[in-house]
Length: 167
Image (cartoon, rainbow, N blue to C red; front, side):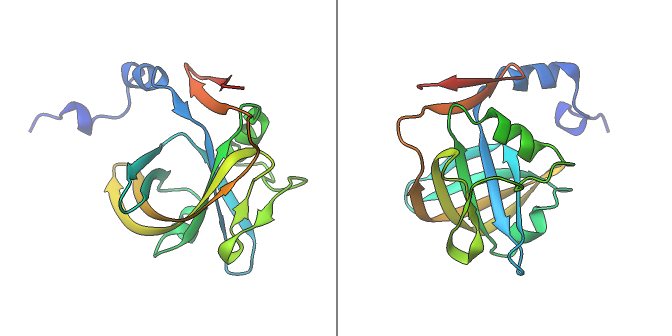
């Protein structure tokens, strides 16, 4: 059987095309049973449904945060403000102590809310998981939307660079 494009590993063309797709930058956070915070940077997020209110997040199968999100886990989608590049880089770095010295508030179930760094924190509970190659697509129901900093614009990632917009 001939391999289709979908079966092949990522090529330079695929990576270049995806780099041209601008994406809002978020930090997905969760808390372990003992209250230890965890999180990662993501641009693989989308609004999925208005009724019921659902969003979808792509998560790498090897993510250390993934086990906290599975089986109905709680999470917060922290939508980073335009000046949030350093926070995004911190949560993208696997070696970083991601919460050290960072201001955050515990939301429902102890989930970290990065309100000082975000336009909004969207508290959710995972409803469904869908296998998607080397990722899982988590479908989450929205429980609460908490305003962060107002009037700050948003952080987007495009062409392998960060850009603050609307600030």
